[in-house]
Figure 1 (cartoon, rainbow, N blue to C red):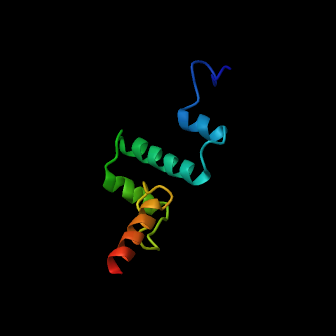
Figure 2: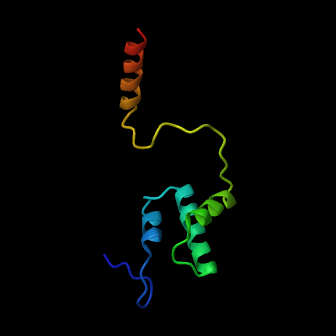
Figure 3: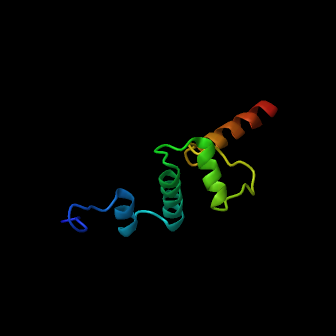
Length: 90
C-alpha cells in the first residue's frame, strides 16, 4: 500500500490514525491543538503547564471530584479495601 501524498510526502502518524478511525474527535482536536501550539511557539516539547493551558483553551473544566486511580483494574482494589474496612469495623 502506497501512503505517499505527492512527491516525497507521507501522511503524518496522527493523520493516518485519524483517517483510519483509530482516533476519536476529541483526541484529534487535542492533538491538533498541541501541534498548533508547538508550531506557533516554536517549541518541540511544551511544558506541563503549557499543556494545561491548551486543555483549558479547549474548554475543559473540572466539574466533578477526582475519580478512582486510572490504573485500578475493574475496581477490584476498591472492593477489596472496602471489604477489609468492613472486617476491621466489625
